[in-house]
Length: 445
Ligand code: PMP
Image (cartoon, rainbow, N blue to C red):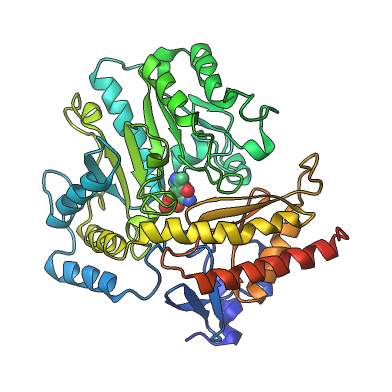
């Protein structure tokens, strides 16, 4: 175990992701153990993990020996082999399993190391589809302002990722095109549902006509979006987007990297909207975060014209994470974690709803076990809420033994899908205390 005196040393040599010098100087917590929905630091302090590892992959909870055994057994059997001109058993079996559970006609899969790579690979597959059909000029990609699609080249430089991360990597990739996000609480079009007639989706036609349909390859979006805190678009949204893509021969990618594998109370969030995407990207919950794995699924229509997929990645179709993924999906199905996500998500949402009485709480929302409390300084105008005060609440929650995350002007919660009512009750108590304390500090009460 690390001793407390080693905190700073551990942080100085290791380059941490999205962590400021101030936080590093104050000392970084080293997490040494996880069990169920709890994690423990080097001093033995326990934390209720309300964000499944802070980036939300740990669907099956911590300490699952079955997953460790799946990796061990596969490493002993076959640790690695190339994805080019050879196949391996776990990758074949995982493709079969995913074909059974993925939405509709998504029946073909390839495996990468994480969500960012899955997004890049999906773009490439789409480009191949157009290229082999003779549509060689289709290079533009459309996404949404405020979307998040990862940190690799296309993800960060073309797909509207969160501002500080993207700005430093500019200029954007040529052909990056954006429409607004369906963030109804603070509508970017200044309209109100349903009178808006989903203007944010219909605007896609105008943008396509302006950019030239013959140059556009794909539209990509998260079915339920992270950017401003776990928000679900109006029910008509994805059908409108699907129709417009079809009209112009543009492929539709649903980025299920967060949503997939039960996070929103369905196996895939696409199922909430009754549409058929052309491609799907997945990661995180596919292995419950135990080993890195990303996947791209596509329909037969996408694959049919492609002769060779000109793509080679050393760790593509890697047998070890695929074996873990198979075991993990078995756990999700066997232990009814998708159903638990729907049921516990409803319980959590009902427990959080009364927080809307607080002067600083603008909206409580959520789908399955992905929820958000969106803050404002003025409920009438929905005036912005300072990031510093959100960060204070995150720090307060940690002191009280719960790990939560901020996103946009919201606090977000995405615990492991094994969470029980008692643990949700505990989390709600901590969240309410943090809100009350911060409102006092802001003189809002
Ligand atoms: N797409 C979406 C929708 C995501 O939320 C993320 C990560 N949060 C990614 C892609 C990138 O995944 P990774 O961090 O595994 O590269």
